[in-house]
Length: 333
Image 1 (cartoon, rainbow, N blue to C red):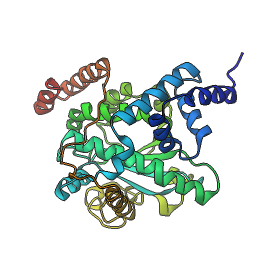
Image 2 (cartoon, rainbow, N blue to C red):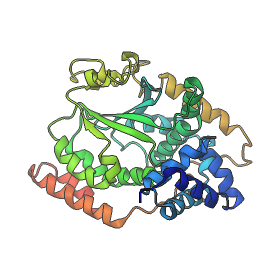
Image 3 (tube, helix red, strand yellow):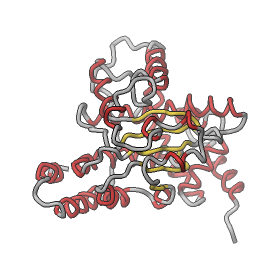
C-alpha cells in the first residue's frame, strides 16, 4: 500500500499542534503561513514516515528555541571589520529568480577562504541568510508570483578550487548538518559550474557528507553553465560568473561592484544588512550583544567527520607531499 502524502500531512499537523507555546511561536517563523508545504518538506526528508518526521520537526523547534534562532536576525555580526571579513571569505549572494519564481542563490565555493573569522561568525552568517531567505525572500516571492514558493535553486561556482579547501571540511560539515536537520528540502537543484581538475577529488570527500536526496539534486554543468542555466532562468538572473565564455576572469570579477552578487554593494546584501540593522533596534537589550556571544549547540555525527577526514587524507596523498599544511589541519579536526 502506497504512502498518502495528504494523510501524512494531516497526521503530522495534529501532532505538531500539541507542542508547547515557545515551539508553536517558533514554528510560525518556520512556516510563514505555508503550513502544508512546510510539513511536506519535513515528511519528504523522512520518506513520509510520520513518526520520524515528527521527531525531526520537534528537534528542529527545540534547537530553534534553545539557541534563540528566532532572534538571529536581530543580532548583527560586528564589529564592522568582522562582518566584512565574513562576507569577503564566505561568498554567497542572491543573483535573481528562475522562470518559475524560485530564488537563485550563488555560492563561491572555490574562492571562499573561510579563514578570516571564527567558526561562530560563519555559522551565524549562514543561519542569518537561511532565516532571511525563509522569512523575507521566499514569502516575498510567493506574494509576487501569486503561489507558494518555498524552495530555491543554488549555483555553486568552483572557480579557484584547491585541494587545500578540504581543510575546511569540519566547518562545512557543521553547516550542512544545520541545513539537513533544520532547513530540509529548501533547495530543488544544485548546479555546479566552472569545475576544475581537482573537483573530482573534492567531490569524493563532500559526497558522503550529503544525504542521498541531496546528491540526486546535484548537476555538474559544462564550463560556466550559461547555456543550461538559461533554460531555467533569464540572462539577468545569471550570477556574474556565468555570464562569460570563460572562467579565467572570475577572480577579478569577484571584486566587481553591483553586478557581483557576493559584493556588499549588491542589492541583496544591502537589503540583508539594513534588515538586520533595523531588526536589532526592536526591543534592543539593555546590554549590547557582545562579539562572539552567538553560539549554536549542534552535534555533528562523529562518524561523518571521521569518514570525511580519512577520505581527505587519501585524496591528498595522491598529490604528493606539497600539501602538508592541509594534512596537519586534518590531524586537529
